[in-house]
Length: 248
Length: 234
Image 1 (cartoon, helix red, strand yellow):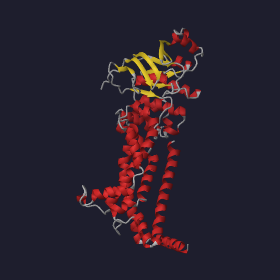
Image 2: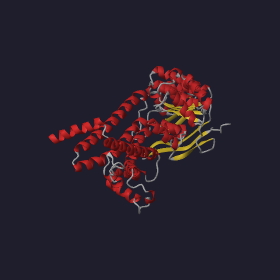
Image 3: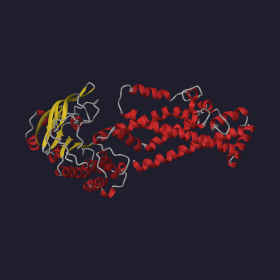
Image 4: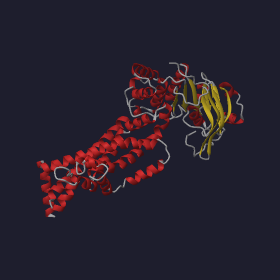
């Protein structure tokens, strides 16, 4: 059965407040697919809140998110969090669970599970309990779980920021493979090198506002706003909001 | 002091000798307490999980009420169940007053708030961790409840144990709705109360020892299972 269209994903006038704290303010953002988008900004800029709002996990206080014109959140999208959440079962069963939820059963489920684990290099430890895996392995398992769903769009919230360089490189490789396989990637990060390697476009946030959206090369060579320029020079002070529910 | 030690020795002999009256009382106690724990868990665990993860109007009031019901006076529960099951009561036609079934109903009502309140607490803590991942996957409410209960199964054993302990140590309500009838509704706690008033300390002490041993053994088993689970599942 043909999947319903998901693109463009349109965020219009997105404002999210937690009590008196405004996390993001009046953001317009469209995602048309095929491109790799990195949401960049200092800690506290509102990156994670914007990502969650686009994914449909947070209802905006003001504004709307639509998926190909529909306000109904479509199923064929996935998200990998900064701290992967694993169920208390084996690595294999964690992937199977996600497929079960999406109505994939029988041989198809087994085939997709094995394939996803193989692609992230976890076949050898498929039957180990997920929660006792290393942090890097858990992050790869989270990617396998998302990949098995074959989502049209994959949201990644700071996927490498808690990993050592080796694990981060491995995770980056997997993300690249997922993108090559046809999934649109939207990733939040404050790591410049990662954003440069992984993205085609940069969305730069500062104090909850979207200041610029530019192709990656242009952003790094010729940023359009003084804030972005200062951020690239490492001069932008952290101005996060301590009472915010989510890290960024 | 001599009376006490003599009674204690006699109690140990009763246990070692497998006294039939003692065995019957212990068996019935375990049976009704296990049944009421099972019923309370079947209803209470999903209910506690629901209250933990589903926002609804009046949720705070429900939580406060559940916590308050933890201190539910057992004699009041006994009285209510008695009125329900007595011949003139709305469920009188069932004819189960002064039967083990009546004891199970009273004990279930007594331990249900405890099961719901403790399950809610466990699930609430886990929900903070799982919420976004399950929402991201598009998991339904019923599936989220099932997933959390399954993932927390070893922790929830503690809830079941606490419920069993409360049910097994219950006297007031059991006395009122069971009637403490010899060979029919006499359980460990009501037998201990009766034998003490009759002055038959060895039997009372023997039952008391068994009650303590049962609770200790269950605690040890659950502790071992949780330790094993922590090592295995992380």
